[in-house]
Length: 253
Image (cartoon, rainbow, N blue to C red):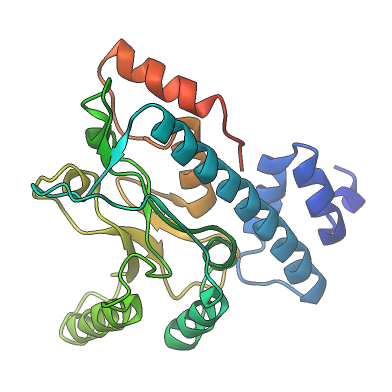
């Protein structure tokens, strides 16, 4: 490989040109050991990733609305939900709070917070009744869906509970997962397991998504968008058609 091609100032250009997998590989290989130029180059890639992700979310919401999809809560009441809250003017403040509280937060997660926003794709499709069982994308990171119940308090209390459990346990291998989404069963109004989210603290550029499987955060997002926002198991040809049609309009990250 040309040594110059892996220099941080080339990452954004190569990412935009389609060399995304290799760029992410090079960035992830550095772990948390980034110098100033590398961190600046990685930040540009993370922000570009988030802009592409926001475009995908906007396209998904628009298309699902056009198809008569009804976004609602994951309970028997099925109360209407706003599917997308774009990042607010306080997103930067939320990013600072996360870093102050957890010490280090992956750059990809902070870019999502500052540029994308909060997403809730749980709902009912008129021609695809199993859609909510296909693990629709949910990411609540800024807490715009809960104006009277600040998400910071939820994160802080969950972390405090984890720290207390760690102090009483002989097993120090347990990692804290910032809870950002119900698991796939809970989304489908079924008793499920622990929430999905990203492991913190973590000084690496790309975070570690802990869900059905554990993978880099951007890899998880790519899986989501490659499946039209519904990355769970589907069992019918009609469901596959719906996902394929939605995914055809989305950008890889």
